[in-house]
Amino acid sequence: MKFFTGIEATIRRAANRFGLDVTRYRPQSTELGRLRAMLSHHQVDMVLDVGANAGQFANGIRRVGYSGQIISYEPLAEPHALLMEASKQDPAWHVAERVVVGRAPGVVEMKVAGNSVSSSVLPMLAMHSDAAPGSETVATQSVSVQTLDSLALPLLGPDARLFIKIDTQGYEDRVLDGATALLDRARGVQLEVSLVPLYEGQATREALMSRMEAAGFSLWSIWPGFFDPTSGRLLQFDATFFREPGTR
Image 1 (tube, rainbow, N blue to C red):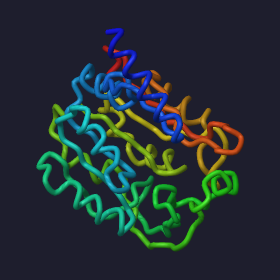
Image 2: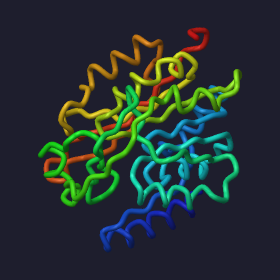
Image 3: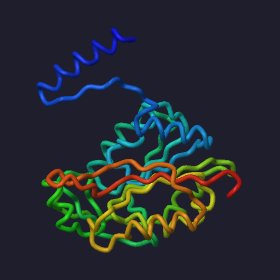
Image 4: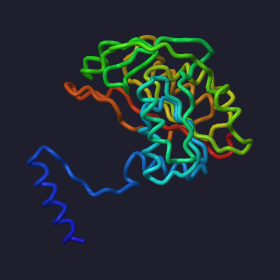
C-alpha cells in the first residue's frame, strides 16, 4: 500500500508541474457514484432527464452503473441531434421530440447561449455572463412547450420507481409546476439551484428548497457546480432530494 501511495505521489507531483492534478479514481467517491448509490438504495428504475443537452447526465449515470430506463428532454436543435446520436445504441434510453418542459402548453423563444449548456427560456443576467464568457445569447429558437405530466405520465407503468432530474437554467420552478402528478409518484428529484440570480425571473434558492420540503422530500446531497472564476464564489449547485421511507 505504501509503495502505491509513493507512486501516486510521484505521478501527482509530475502532473502538478504542468498545471494538472491526478487522484485515484474511486467511483463511489464521485458525485455520480454517490448518486448511483442513492438510485440503487431507492430502487429507481426510471429517470426523467429534463434539460438533457447532449446527454452528459445520462451518459454519466450509465458510466457508474445505472441500467434502468432513461427518458431525455431537450429543446434545442443542435444538442438534440447530439443527444439522439448518443442514445442510439442504448435501447433503454429514449429521447423525446424537441420540446420545452414547462408549466403549460404554448410556444416560447429559447435564448441560445454561445456555450449551449447555459441556454434558457429566461434572459440571462450579467452575473452569469460575466462569470462565464462565451455564454451570452447568440440566437433564439422558437420551441413548443408541454408539461412533464402530459409528456411522461402516459409512458410510465403503474409500478415505475421514478427519479426526475431538472437542469433548465432558471426554469426549474416552471417544470415543477407542470409535473405535480409525477412529483407525487417520484422517489427522488435533482434540481439545479442558484445561490444568486443568474436569469431574469428565476425562482430563488429558498423558494425551491422550501417547495421540495413541502412536497415531502429531504435533501440528500449537494453538488457544487458553477463558480465565478475571478472571485471563487459558488453561483449554482445541484441539489438531490429523496423521500424518506414511508412518506409516499
